[in-house]
Image 1 (cartoon, one colour):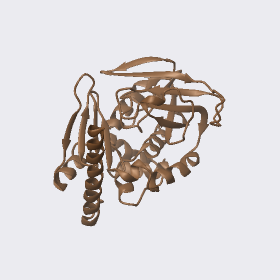
Image 2 (spheres, one colour):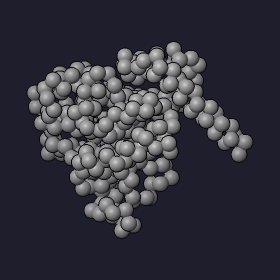
Image 3 (cartoon, rainbow, N blue to C red):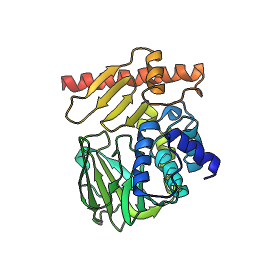
Length: 293
């Protein structure tokens, strides 16, 4: 990563270039990343999904955009390497709460391991609802604020997923992405290209169907899906608010989520609002069907 790109990226994070790689700086960088660079799929919704080249993602972040895991963790890994950290990328997969016993890894997530000061950490800025700070990459239960996270070895059960060599299972029962399996073997950006194409273009993909933005802070998670804005905080009832006008949507995207909107033309904005309304109608229909059932 060139100094120009990394300096722009660090400015977006509100972070001065650390003089050397330390665990303290790593923790601060992850906190800043989660607060300032949103998990978002705006360009996918507009039919122009950005590629996952890490330098491209870093340039986009410097310009005020966000992305999803392949963009967020891909660029973050490159930034950390530029700052002198030892980073390993891993093939991962997000599962539902009821799938905790599954050992397979779908490849729809990019997980990171960072080694610094003699310790390895699970680092993730790409889940939207992930841990606020890195977790020690060893089996255990960890609390951050009101959230509880678990890490456990992912044994290779010989169930045909082709991974081999085991890996790790991360569990967060308090968020929208409750389980992530990832393999121990290192991966490279090209390993995620085919899945990125599917996730960003297939009509069956949630990224294509529903506008989504997420951000994390020390106390909780902000989630926008379609026109429904939610706030998740442990020990509190999840709040929901429906955005009734396009102006409310732009204010939330640009304010709460910090996503610059200067790249959106009037045509783009009309298309985004229409897409948000379609997904909102689908959400209402699903909720009504659940109530009847």
